[in-house]
Length: 194
Image (cartoon, rainbow, N blue to C red; front, side, top):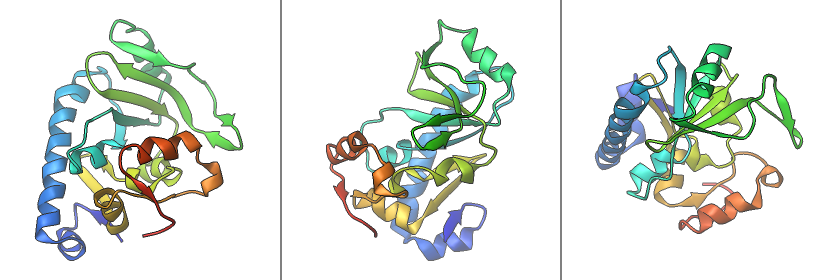
């Protein structure tokens, strides 16, 4: 069962009062960061979600490495807005005009731009929904997502974060070994399920 913040009764049933307080505190920190940074750029309308390692970092009071902002349904205007501002953004890798193959899996990532002024990493995609973005994430703890002031978290996601359990969301053979090592170095331990 996914907690969708629009349903307060579900939140009450899934999490204890202390856990809810921790989740709201982390969400508040995330909202402050987004209001400060993402609201400033680009000067276009973007539909985006936030997902990845930011929420585990906030919930566990760990160092923040980056904030992954996944831009949905990226248009050419959005790509050009990032590319025309090299003093603000560092482009990571080439910009792709079409879907391309990364090993055996299709990637829907068009381009990645790091904001030089903060932790924000804009991942331009042709995904249309939040669910599409997180469905291929490698580990459960990174699947917490935030869209339009709503936080989406499940009990398994929360437990994986708090207990630092490294639980694959996709088959293990599709996960780069460096990703396992990265999270193990941050105190996560590998388990098959919750």
